[in-house]
Image (cartoon, rainbow, N blue to C red; front, side, top):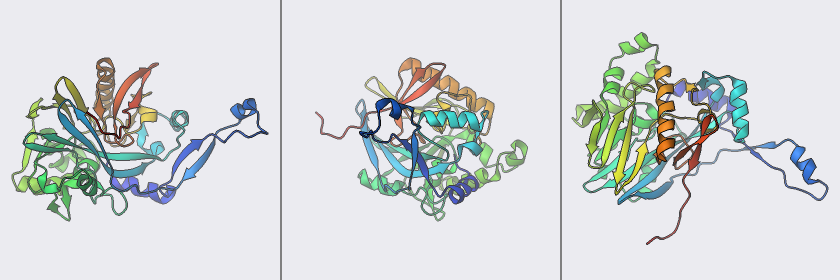
Length: 338
């Protein structure tokens, strides 16, 4: 997800509104039967900035912190493909949602011995005022500063994942090495690919703006093949959403967490109907195949995954649900442990 020209019209027409459904309270005059038969009434909730937010957990011995970069509205009728508005609305209704829905922008911090690692960097200033831009504050709330980051793992070179690398053209993380799929670098730094593949030129502008300062400083390590990128972290390449899209798997003491990038944007629609693609996919066929294979593998293995656009903190499991799948977020924990 990254196209600013798509996001802005949504804001004008929808006013950044998120619609949810609530069940009216039962009154003395209303019988349970009547209440069950009455249609659910939707209430429109005005958007509220929650500011910085973090969520901590441990994978084996390794602390991991989800960092919020805010959220953005997305119009699923205009963005989702290989489906219909009627199917979208029916699936959203099951989740008490209507379009536009709100998509979180999540990044993740990994504390390794000798390495402080970010997985994705949020949108930064690329969506304009009021959208994104909360990552530095969330990082501060977690107790760290940008100059402490040693490594950045970019799942793919879209603006809401790489945009936070820069501010006003300057590197936000001056001491960090950026690890990103070589295929994304090759693709997005050849502007001729826009015409050859009919992929919007905006994506190529974003990559140049976000990544070139790090390339010029010699601070980019391309990921050309599957393998270890840092101690305890391996990368696997999954072309589809972009040519160099990558998963990153953190393992420690027999536990694992997989950072999956943009394999899903709408839990309500794409988990039950994984063949549904989105306009941001560079190769729809391959993106759909990656999602189907990943959901099957994650379900069979009970794999814990971190997803950039699920509701914050975006960490949970995938389970089988009829012919499709369902998203099961992790429990919220807020207490001292042993």
